Length: 124
Image (cartoon, rainbow, N blue to C red):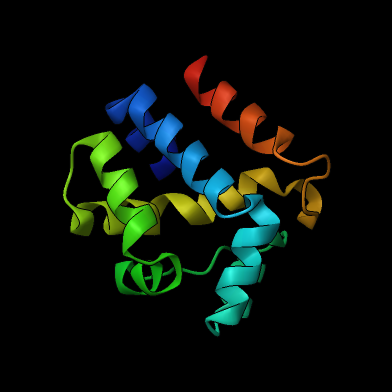
């Protein structure tokens, strides 16, 4: 079981819903990848999209890319601090993006990939 599964199993529907909301608010995987690229982290996010090993990201980098608003929203949904939310997202996002981009390709059809991913977690 990966970190993402462990966290989502421990935090339940709030974590899955919070992650889905966060991805949608950022324009899905493509929008999030663009934000990371704009922050000088294109190689990092590309490692998550590609088929190789996922590069790590720090909670500070997550906060830099996403900004305080989305992190505060995620934190409030889970009932944790913004610092804990950044740490959680630093662990979750690489695996989430990796799962949403099988074969190293961005999902098509809007937010369907996000809904499918989150739905899969909720059925576990």
